Image (tube, rainbow, N blue to C red; front, side):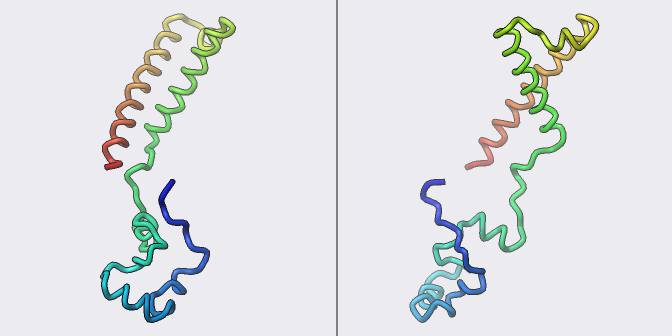
Length: 123
């Protein structure tokens, strides 16, 4: 992202303020946060400390919903472009096609909820 510091190619042990000289040691005393030398972002410091951020991991239900929405979108695109309904070709009955399309609609609602959940977590 724009404005975030670039990660250092040096190992974290060589970035210790004592290894950087007396000016960095004075900076360390002024700020009591570890690894606060402008090289690491907060997310990288949490990952380096062993705490992985988990608020944006997808569950199996999220993956199924996303795949269903993508397949439904591709099917709608094929219907619009070349009048080809893949679900109707694969499924033998019209009721089965409508049931699959209903499940895709429910998956789309789940994805909307997932999108808002991610939007609230970004603050």
